[in-house]
Figure 1 (cartoon, rainbow, N blue to C red):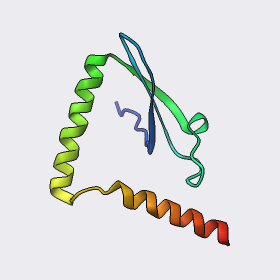
Figure 2 (figure 1 turned 90 degrees about the vertical axis):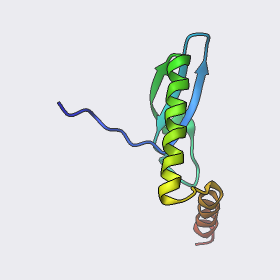
Figure 3 (figure 1 turned 45 degrees about the vertical axis):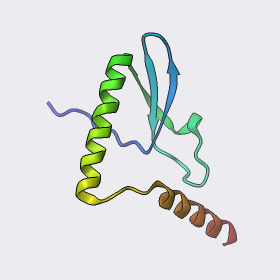
Figure 4 (figure 1 turned 90 degrees about the horizontal axis):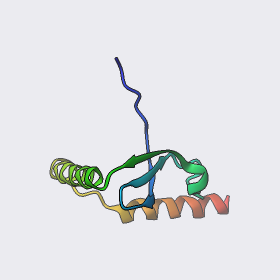
Amino acid sequence: MEKPMYYCNIAQIEGISLNDFRIGFGIVKDRLKPNLEDDLDFYLLTSPQHFKALTNLFVQNLKIYEQIFGEIIMEANEETLRTIGEEAEVI
């Protein structure tokens, strides 16, 4: 049976308690004005232990990705978005 797949380009920790982490995931609807309230589409509720295991898994795989494809530079992406936003306002 094929499992559903979701794309995500925005996420936020929505809540932390003794027993759970609540993580919101979604897709930015307007790249010039991201809005977490509108952009978060679903939530993952998980234990602190599993959250730590997922975090370690993400970090390990990110290191492998960057060894293969090169460092991901976050500032360049943010600068590109700012530039696109400035051009959109001028037009």
